[in-house]
Length: 412
Image 1 (cartoon, rainbow, N blue to C red):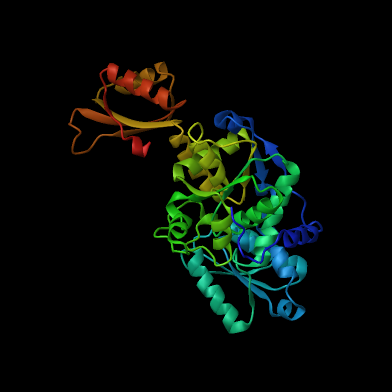
Image 2: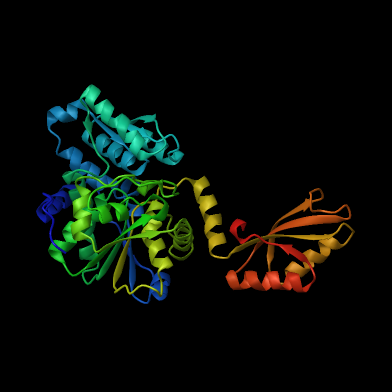
């Protein structure tokens, strides 16, 4: 990799680390046996989900705001964020005595909104995306003189996020591959600056949500290009346009940018909850999701460090995502059967499900419909299963019993 001409240096990252040592502690790095077995190499989880305010964002926000002049601090700051940057800026403002205003999308997760308010920030929810909220933040800065604290596109932000890279090298000095979730690119760029200077042979991989991936097209074009769609559960990395500071760093210092599917993110969230006992938000699980999707098919040299960038997840969203992840993992099966509308029909199918070792979660009787005859009833079932092979065994057992099975795997 050829070093970029960016002004962000390892010396600045080290200075940021010294500054932050009075504010935050290094986050844990945990060896994960389950991921290691699947990948075929040692995998360590860098737990930024356990960081103060729930994500890596406090690193860059505090570093940026600390270096404002006294006159700039007196004017206050403004930010735009889907949640994690908002909390980082609000917490930094609380610690530094700076007034904070944050524009957040109207659908920003409620726990993130409430946490930002709890740190003392003034909140205004506008727009559907981070990019729309950022327009309002820029307008407020121009109108009032408040200092815009960009979520990723500033040298001080990148230097602050790069302190995570220094910790990785201290905690896993023989690391060979680092996998990092990618939105605007602040933490990926910061880690890359640190790695290329201090351990240049490390392979660095950025991971974007497939449904909100601006970087692949931008890298192909050679300049930032807006994403054509933004439909991902990973709101923390749903950034429509790479930044002027971060884009050249990612282009010049990162080995590859990959994408992960929504199903991959769901599976990773469930895997991390079950196997690592870690609560991670969708954006924070994107790197782990890519590793799981590519287990056995990608040549990834270990030790691997997978950055879990945040853990601020709405419990209601978590419930939906866990269910989605269980479907993707083959843990749920939904199908319907049509049987005679006579006593004993329901009992018979329940017994047959039990014989197939499937646990029944929900049952619905449907007696009217265009394709249901007068003497029939349609029974819709949702079952708990043990994986794709078990699903096939259950469906085969039902058909062998003579049931007319109506199964749409896309709606399990």
